[in-house]
Amino acid sequence: MKLEAKNVTAGYVPGVNILNGITLGLAEQEIVTVVGPNGSGKSTFLKCLMGFVPASSGTVRVSGVDCTAMAVHRRVRNHRMAFVPQLDNVYGPLTIRDNVRAGGQHMPRADRERRADELLHRYPALGDRANQRADSLSGGERQLLALCRALMPRPDVLLLDEPSAGLSPAKVTELFDAVVDIRAQENVTVLCVEQNAVQSLAVSDRGIVLVQGQVALQGPARQLLADPQVSELYLGGLPTATNPEPFMEESL
Image (cartoon, rainbow, N blue to C red; front, side, top):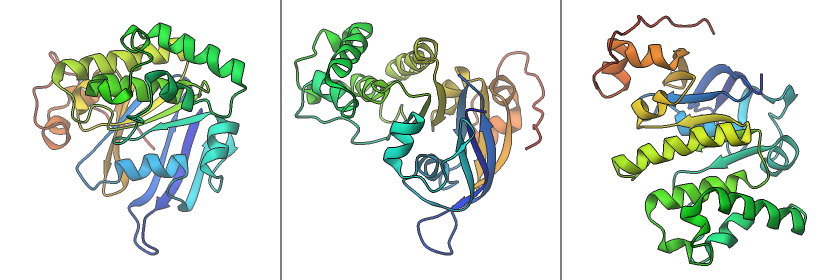
């Protein structure tokens, strides 16, 4: 497994857990979406995996290495993890190019410049305006910029916290198309927490439902989307897929 959590508990106040024994694993180059009701611990789980919130018990492993007590910067530099937060994820007064460069601040200068050029060339919506301020971008362009900055050091694991927040439906589609493209181009494993569950699951290999800080369900994303009960409880009651297959919970 590329990323593993085993019996992870965590919270913000001693003795008060938000996560209550989460166990799951992500394979190489897998896209997995985490959904669930508000307050179920989805964003806290991402922050715990990244090291922003320490685990009070359990283990987090990246490529088989125990990172549970490891500082955030070591997870980034030594174990090739990257995290894109929901809000305040670009530096508005800086240029688009400087925002991208910021993701590679620990890279040798020549490597950093080559990598920034590569990413800006790949995404012309950014590259064509590379010297403009980041606060001139639309919401969708800002999210793409945040993704590019996270990709600078060539991570193996990419954690996305509500990447579609505040975007129009058209921009949401573009964003998830970009996530699929990133997986193909970068060979990266993606774990995404997302309120826009239907569109995120549509591009995912698997889905995971968190309820009260525990894994309630997990399985192939297509089956999760197709299950009427899951749709009603966790996906906003939206219509299920045509010819749905019954959802079978996988053993944890």
